[in-house]
Amino acid sequence: RLDLALLPVAGGRLDLAATVAPPPGASLGSALDGDALARAPATLRVTSDHLDLAFLPALAPGLIRAASGRLEVNLAGAGPLATLRPTGTLRLDGGRMAVAELGDWTGIDLDLAISDRAFELRRLAARRGRGTLEGELSLEGFDRPPARLAGKLTFHRLELERAGMPLAELELPVVVSGSYTPDRLDAVLDLPGGTVRLPPKPPRTLQSLEPRPDILVGRLPVRRRRPRAAAAAPATPFVASIRLRCPGKLRIVADNPRMDVELKSDLTFRAAGGAVLADGLVETVQGRVEPIPGRSFRIDRGRAIFSGEALGAARLDVVARHDGPAIVVTTRVGGTIDTPSIALSSLPPLDEASIAMYIATGRVQLKQGTSSIGALGGEDASQLALGAVTDQVFRTLVAGKLPLDQVAVDTGALRAGKYLTDRFFVGFVRRFDARPELGQNSNEVRVEYQIDSRWTLESRYGDAQSGGASLMWSWDY
Image 1 (tube, one colour):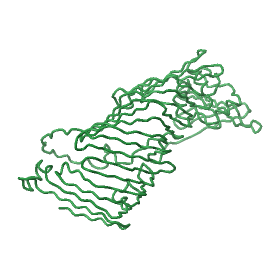
Image 2: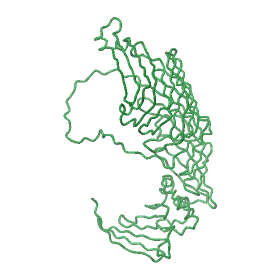
Image 3: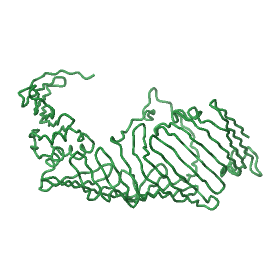
Image 4: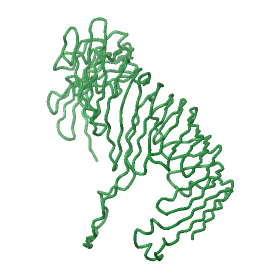
């Protein structure tokens, strides 16, 4: 018999009482040693009285940073220990919880009822910032499996985040249906339409702070050979299958780079044994992408084809077109999500380097094999000064196509350069905010020669008759 009472300092009370008895015809000792324990009769009773959730950070340090709200629990259960299913109610009004990686959530309301045949989440509500989540879910038919899953979730300007970095803002309804058995979940999520707004900056991949299992500090432990245990029968893994259906009218919107794409999909995710596989298709109905200000691409075709493998193995088939005043550029993206391939073509026909320079600057003035670039007009300079070309989209789409070793654009300058040998580097800088009356070069050539591992000779000269030379000594430590 187990009796537990929890009396948090913040207030309220939680009581738990449980019993386990030997199954008929067995002693307690034999039940603990064999499979009979799963058939052992058991009882459970959990009740609370205005339990304040402020104690949760002490129970889950590092996961829950803060919590509040009054929880009312009234659960009971009886039957075999392995299949004990509690019945009763659970209710939380106006709760608050700050969860590591997921941010602060307020206005949490839960109204849950459990019976021997159904699980009913009659109300679910939460608020994060200006966004809200509301919904209800039910799982009925435990007495006649498979149980039926049904419900609806509504996201209103709800911003999701991970590790303090925004992932997306959701404005859409989700209709849930499916079935459930103890070893399998088959769910269908129907999205009749809505909007997903992406953040200005994509989330970064953070380095884990957990100890590395492949790095050992100290002496190697002495390994003693242990007797080999008999192989246990492999357990049947739980399988979860989630089908995402969207007939269209799902907009993916972003401001940097500018994007407004309408998608439709029929995609099934399958998780079993720790692996997540995907099968199906996601394709664009219509849309435009502007990776660089002033370079708008219309998506003529866009597909991601999943064939039952990992998400990164999906095949891409994307064709986008930019209609310029004198040049029409077509971009084709193939390969997979993990290793995409990009091909550029144009009318009239140009080589990929010239097309890439046109996308970056609006002019085709790249001289193959050198770093000299003709002067840019004021309109081009103002567009480049926006700095959008430093985005990952520019580096993927354009920078890899230029016959240069260095391409960089910021709010003040365009820089390009090439190593003629391992030690000899020639570069060009075009400054948009230069003031020639003060001796500042608008166009400047830089030359760098590495004498040895510590000595480097650098020189520069430009159209304002301004220049200089430096002999640099450095030491890496």
